[in-house]
Amino acid sequence: MTAKKQIGLDEMSRWQLLFRALQHRNFRLFFLGQTVSLLGTWMQMTAVAWLVWRLEHNAFLLGFTGFAARIPAFIMAPLAGVLVDRWNRHRLVIITQTLSMVQALLLAGLMFSGHIAIWQIILLSLLLGFVDALDMPARQSFMIQMLDRREDLTSAIALNSSMVNGARLLGPVIAGLIIAASGEGFCFLINGLSYIAVIAGLLMMRVPLHRRAASKPAVFQHLKEGFVYAFGFPPIRSLLLLLALVSLTGASYAQLLPVFAQQILHGGARTQGLLASAAGLGALAGAMLLAMRRSVRGLGVWIAWAPAVFGAGLIGMGLSSALWLTLTVMTVIGFGFLVLMAATNTILQMIVDDDKRGRVMSFYTMSFMGTVPLGSLLAGSLVHLIGAPATVISGGVCCIAGALVFAARLKNLRRLLRPIYIRKGIIPEVAAGLQSACGETPP
Image (cartoon, rainbow, N blue to C red; front, side, top):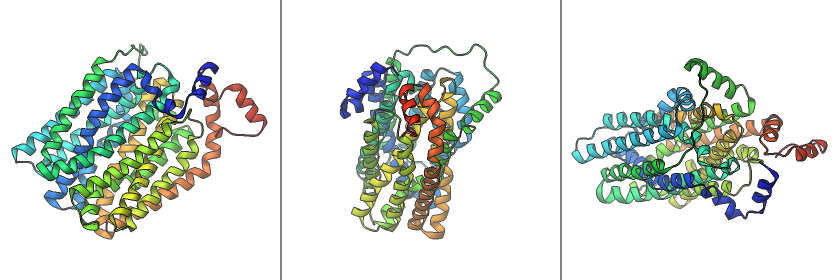
């Protein structure tokens, strides 16, 4: 980042910083299309969870459905990252979004036929999981190609998170109303049709071609290179492991929302939608707060405390039996998890080499989405043994413990990141020299 560009960022107001990524045409197209599509996605996720619970009233099957939807990300993520680094990311995202549309329309067709069964829901969830395992690292790696200025990546990632959680705020509420009035099938149909917006936006983009190496190493060698690069560098390794721990032990709370809505709060699909939307509201607040930051400097501290906030929210959720109190702690849960996820994504995207971006983001997908199914399966089993409240409380304790370990290592991780921040212009060399003379570390 040049001095001129840095001065420009310094002169921006908080609101200008928030929306600066929208100056880029390709990102605007992506943002508008995804806003429509993600609304349908959250409607479908809410409808699937409620449908499984309505058909079977079985917490284990509820957890197993979440397991089926996300376990492909754990299995396929490393290979997906290799493919993302070798293939055209723009075309790849178009393909994955089209396949997701087909999956949603198949669910709708089965619902309207009146012959849907649990095994079909699980099978289609598994199919979507395989698509998502390739789609997520492809979209995350493609994001930087939508921008003309790398320094706007922080805004783009935070706006993307805002978009996801804005849809998360509205989608479950709309789904709850539609389910109560017309059934789950209309949620699936609306989701399928919503993909038209994002596919149209992708097709309208003007993406410059990025030259790839003429000769590529064998797939296994490419995979090994990415693994050594990611897990051989302590800052990347620590970020991925913390996110994996929190996703494994805490993120499964989302799969248990139908249980809390009906058994703890004595409500129905609307109550479930309100709980999910409350978490989305907290996450949206966290995303907007991140988008107003000028650079990645200082995000390490945010990552250190975010899992503790998330864990405290889970403990509050487990102890609450009142709707108003549960809705309040759900906003805390959404805020803490979003800050951890988006801040980790931002730092990784800023420090990785471009030719390894797909593989690193696939490991991010593996840590974020890939461990969730294992947590969902574990949570579904624990509910039968200790109950839903105790299950989320134990997850919250694990998240707080992970935050404390990461915080203890933060000073050393900052020292290792300093040369990369200087090389990429995040810390100007002169300023870095002054900090070194004063014995300071980058925040």
